[in-house]
Amino acid sequence: MSGELRQRLEQAGIHTLLVQFADVHGTAKGKLVPLSHLSDVITLGAGFAGPSIWGTGLPRTGPRSEYYARADAATAWPLPWMPGVARLIGDGYVDGQPFDACPRQVLKRAVHRLAQRGWTLKTGIEPEFFLLKRGADGQWLPADDHDRLDKPSYDLHALPRQAGFLHALQQALQSLGLDVLQLDHEDAHGQYEVNFAFDEALASADHLMGFKLAAHALAEARGMVFSMMPKPFANQPGSGLHFHVSLWAGEACLFEPGTDATAHGDTPLSALGQHFVAGVLAHAPALAALAAPTVNSYKRLTVGESLSGTSWAPASVSHGPNNRTALVRTLPGRFEWRLPDASANPYLATAALIAAGLDGVDRALPLPPARHDDLFEIPPAALRAQGIGFLPQSLGAALDALEADPVICAALGDTLTPEFLRLKRHEWTAYARHVSAWELQRYASAF
Image (cartoon, rainbow, N blue to C red; front, side, top):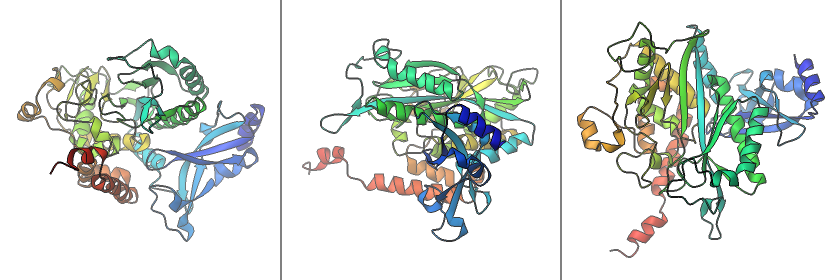
């Protein structure tokens, strides 16, 4: 196989391989390898110092100090912004065995659980992002100085000003095998969204990593900074990473409503789909730690009034047919999971989603009543009185929920769970003890 692949890549003008993997934060890492060593990176992998990679917890000595990204030959694609270079996605191996804390291996384990039942999960992931620059005073600003509308959603003045970047991004994604559906200006200044077609869960996560690689490079080439920070501006909406989710057995969508409709006849999902969503809702607090994994994430997922006014980030644990104010928006044969933000690691978020959904299926969890109303307009106290819970309101609280959830911890595994908790608790502590400019302005001379 490697001989045929090498010949194909040589004919395409490829001389170098970018062997890429994802760390625990969902950041692309890797190294360049001459094409002549293609067979080596497929059979053994490209080697890295394990402790130098976030989230491995590997020692500095011995055979387990070496991390190998073993290339998946099916993921070989030329990178148009790096002529002569093709990307190969690697799975983590340590001491000759699949590394259980590699995010891609975590998702592959979750996908295997589905395959044992004859099922395949498909996701359509919708990344939102900002194009930023540094101002003269060092402050982060939208890259487009003229992007100032009070309601910039679908703005056709700003969109043409970024047409060069967006067209290059579209071409790059299509060259990586993605079916780009649409690109638009989102609700905040300097914010955009790209939609590409849904795919099998592992492929969708791989696609998102390719999208980030392309967008970073193309923005930098134009003097801009591509940002998937969840909420860079307090007075503007943040960036989501919504997942459209469906479950399949061959060509049959198992979430399609049919004769197995339950008491919740207004939910456009099968009984299996309703149990799956019930599991997602039941584990929502723990899922938040993976789908909203940064301190900044919780500036977006606010209970009550948001400083930005407009918000598309539901914090109430709820579902409703075509209801974008609910955590889960149900649609015929699929649901949209609206919890994840742009900083989520797609492999870990998807693996945790699968674990939660399967727990709902295995325990036949009942789905709470659907909500048809605008949940943003109902005071939090009234929602609580109606039995609606809320997501954690800080990274610290989300980590507590994750640590207390054996189902989601089992999906991450015995190696990754404590490492993820350790790294993220350090992030939370560093933030909590930081003295901000807001605090100095408010308190320095107040008492």
